[in-house]
Image (cartoon, rainbow, N blue to C red; front, top):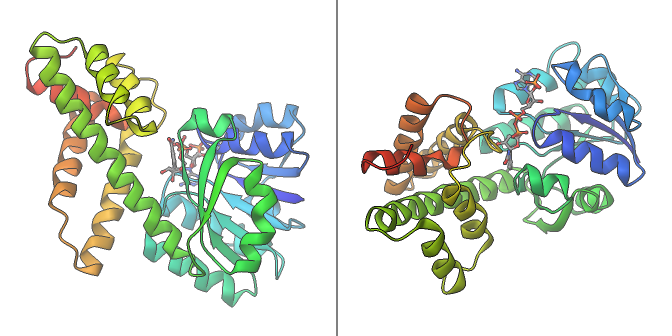
Length: 294
Ligand code: NAP
């Protein structure tokens, strides 16, 4: 398939690479063009603008940092909306606000273009291994058309309805739960560590008994090894996600007291550790608050 890929960060670069490996024809665009170099070597074509990246493509994926970057790439004279043919499809895979997904759906509809939302679960290592979990929402026929593309990047696809923004909401629920799990892990590990039980030993017991889940295994190893840099998912993007969860919670009138704790803890972590740590460094904050940690 002729695919455009916009956004070659930690996630996007690995995803675009897997599309090339699966035999798709891929045009790429990234704000910092240098990040496209290894993909060009692997057979991708570099586009000068998001618009050019969409011209002649059946499907264009965006994998960008946040709502503002998606808006910057979709709109304007050089934007995706101007380049995408009518009946061609934009697949938004970034984690974005429900309201942004609704706005994008309306804009593409007005241009006679198709739009689905398909955010992902999985860190850059999962993206590189084509093991992402992809949560897609949009018209059935459009999700079917995108399936071969998803299969080149992910291990499982969940279709969660015909309204694209539903996928954005599912992704935000998931990220809220990931950070809640990391917070619980960080607190338990600090307690054990300060009481003289090595963190690795606690993790072995947890994952060998009632907590044998990818989330505890993946983040448990990060916390045991204090592997908060280089970041797989930078803390400011995690803070963005907690803000988006909060926006949905407010508009739907859902009190989420735990969300506020997580948001504050992440903010404290960024204030002290800087912008370049992984969002799981909230566990480091917990440890430091207890007089432990680096
Ligand atoms: P990242 O490494 O920070 O990459 C962000 C991308 O967005 C880069 O290509 C960056 O371009 C681009 N960008 C930022 N601001 C822009 C702007 N104003 N205009 C145009 N492009 C802009 O982020 P990531 O980790 O790949 O995450 C991408 C998305 O996936 C996010 O929505 C994130 O929440 C979600 N996600 C991440 C993970 C993870 O573990 N990392 C997992 C699941 C979902 P430059 O290269 O020029 O900076």
